[in-house]
Length: 183
Image 1: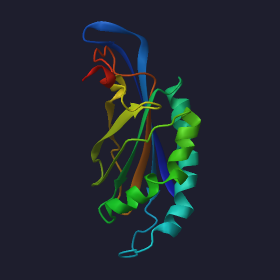
Image 2: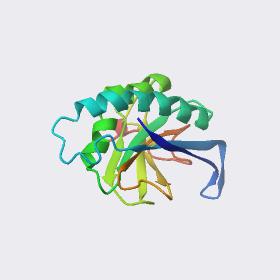
Image 3: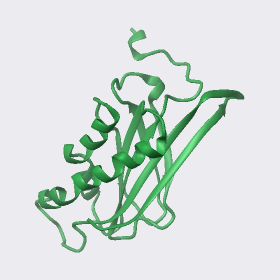
């Protein structure tokens, strides 16, 4: 795995709707810009060797980084794969939709739910939204949120941006009842 750069983004929301948020709502994103392991090979039928060579190491790299950046216990999380124009969406999906990748984050966050994801192909500077859900109960609506990300110089055509996102709480000033209250 060749990592060109790691990008860390942290936001702290201190007020929402004209009211203070206490404690402040923190959201962190850590993204690795890597060489696409299948770039230049044409259509690759078996993505397994590239997954085996990359996914676990990538998860092991990013999971502790996003937890450290958040600086608080994780309540919501998500992931992303943005593939450069010379790759396939399937290349990004292959790396993030495997337990070899996701279990690093699930274990580090003491999570049990599936990691929500976004994956797409895009040019350098593509804006993408990472969906977040609660780490143990995907029906808790207060934690359904997104974080917008843009890396100004990535992905290059033969790169993939792989990102993890974590939030310290649900949406600031959320007022929706749990899904279980609807009949």
